[in-house]
Length: 91
Image 1: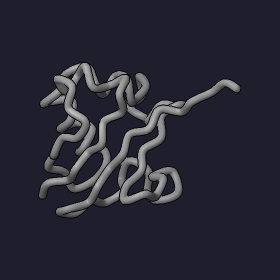
Image 2: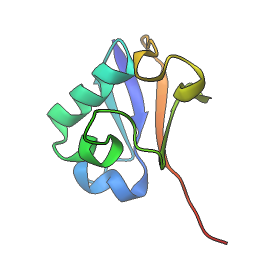
Image 3: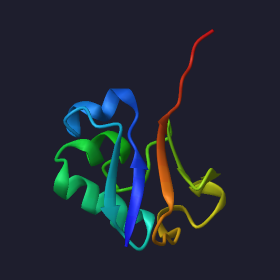
Image 4: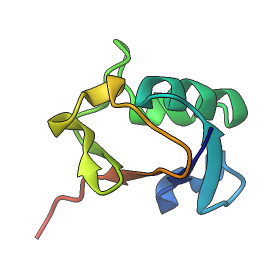
């Protein structure tokens, strides 16, 4: 089941400049693994050494923050949209 993943500008070097990619995945963890398989190096920028999403990276499944859903176990289905959003600091 294909899920559309929106890639932020800083990570597009891993996707050959693509703004969106389609990934088959049943949940966020599988999406990140499959994203890494097709675009090596991207998962290290999104997840820490333990496999958890980095503190300064937000992932949204259909506009809902996965931290308020089931985190990496958040289920996905055909046609869902996932956005990877790096936190921005400063002022």
